[in-house]
Length: 183
Ligand SMILES: Cc1cn([C@H]2C[C@H](O)[C@@H](COP(=O)(O)OP(=O)(O)O[C@H]3O[C@H](C)C(=O)[C@H](O)[C@H]3O)O2)c(=O)[nH]c1=O
Image 1 (cartoon, helix red, strand yellow):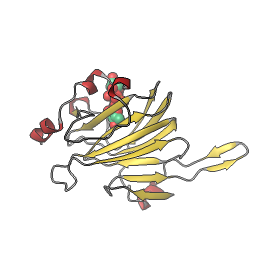
Image 2 (tube, protein in one colour):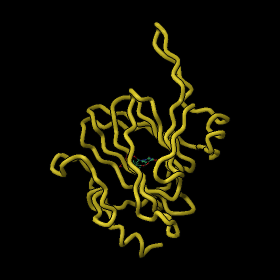
Image 3 (cartoon, rainbow, N blue to C red):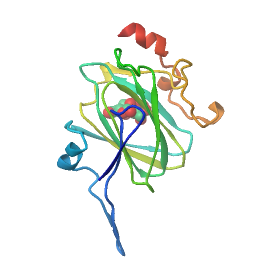
Image 4 (spheres, rainbow, N blue to C red):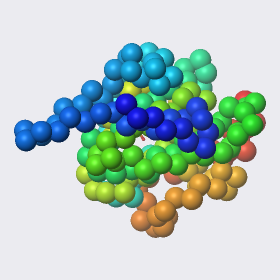
């Protein structure tokens, strides 16, 4: 499996092998030993799957407070996303910095977003299906959302706000400044 580090090394891009033949393809999309060799030793306890019907669906920026924070291993079954991981670790030298990568079915790539990061994505195609493993279970009481277009984070989303589809929760999320007051 090919592995690439991004501007924040804890966030990793992975390219599992895809064996193609006249029938189609086979791919081990997760293998504990192979991923451990890539430095991903977290166990995963839950698989998630979301469908976004149009391009312009923006989900995020989400995280779960400690001790419920989740590592996430994200891939795209169909379509394309711009995936964003924001470093929200209070003592990190890259606090507030984002890593952005396109994850899509054609490239068959995955992104590993460790705990300590807020996560979100913007769909770039209709009928985009995202599946991802998480290392701790969903804990609604611990779920938090930081505003997708927070001025201090200054994430360069490549789509005009008027075209975005957001949940009410995400549209009314807290600012990064308010998050910093929490920690
Ligand atoms: C996350 C989650 C949600 N749900 C239920 C709760 C809601 O009734 C419904 C939709 O949840 P939500 O609007 O939070 O879904 P997304 O906006 O796709 O949230 C996800 O999007 C960003 C990109 C993430 O990184 C998180 O994993 C996750 O928060 O599914 C569950 O039952 N289990 C779960 O693990």
